[in-house]
Image 1: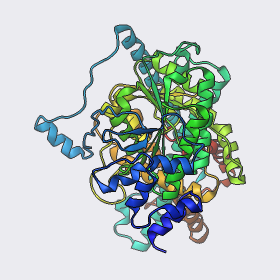
Image 2: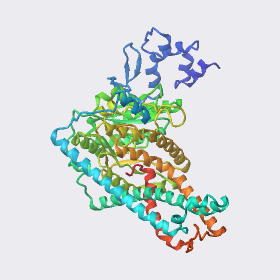
Image 3: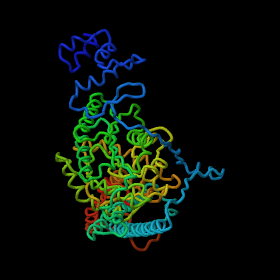
Image 4: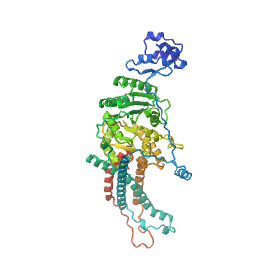
Length: 591
């Protein structure tokens, strides 16, 4: 049995129909299946002539309306995408080297972006007001965090046993035995390292604590004068001139789950009465042949079942460049100019029609908002591990997102999905160039969402979190292995993003986002070092003879003071604030 015979045998035809097909070549097979007897100039195009016949035999219930059309050369194809209207979208190269930027300034080649205001005088005054309030709030957060860290570090110093740093004079140790000098200094070096690590880690935990505490007060009070959700009543009609694209980039996902979530979202949009303002784009980077076929079939069935012809589109890229961010960029270049806004969905995202309509209303009420991030709630999980994570995020997630909004206001960031984006400034300012160099921390940016938010803010557009807008949902990894795979990707992405910490023009808040993104993963080895030094100090304290006299002619001895009972207070605080620090793993960028 040759390949042609195998192909004929796999066709959904009766035995008599299969025997009637010629087996000389695939071109002859497709010509026999072509009921309309198309004539193509190239033999490679002959399979296009049999598309209609093969689809009608394979998926007779999936074809709806005018899904089969002819291209400019008369070839039959699926009407999967609207006609492209291309826009230019290109990235500026990164200047991550401060020495190189200094040299550019000396040569008069400062390329820092400068943007003109797009707002009226009244809108500029309102914009300046919340910016001032946001700066004041963040200074308060910084003061609270540093003050709490100083007090806790001082208290920690009183707990540790060795209190004689002021009596140690390195000049007096020059002439004495090297081993004696080493043993005199060792406990104090260990203790100083413990205090430094304690201060860094306590500051990290304290920032999360104040963020969660302010989020609790926000939810308790129930209102914020500067909340972006307060800018609309919630029932304003949508502007028909401002259309919105719901885009879902996917790659080798569970097809049934993806299209079930998409169907739930679209049916909710139709129920809200605003379906005419939205289009759906399924942007596939899948490369598994079976999954690609299943996606096309599921898309055709979805259109037939929800009457979504002309509003639900499907495209599979041939060149998978820059992963998800490249997929979104490709959409923006081809069809972005036809839409005012786009909502980015993950493969596991579900959003209600009221939530989507609310995001559009917020965009229209805030002409200087570039990105508005909803607060997705974890749902739909059934494994024990995922249910535990889901419960935890449902408990502290609302507190933390409300706290983030309070401290950041319109200088926040977004998490790459379940957010609405103003398309025009995204095209103009948010294209991502690869990071220069070689190795794991160069090339295409992985955690593109933080960087896109930073670029949007650098261009003068606001980035907000609509923490109190219901109807946004996501799913969590079902098991620990999937969690670790995602965490590894996030870890590499955050470490890559830190290379942009000194890029000129970035807002200080987004520099802090890059820093806290690194701390989300650097905190673990720092905690290990803290425990290792604490253990070493305990060993030194237990096995070595204390040094009571640290300088010549010292009248009174320095008594080591080991007071572990006083350690209960910082330990209790750490237990209470650890929930906030754990939340920072899911919502980085607390400052």
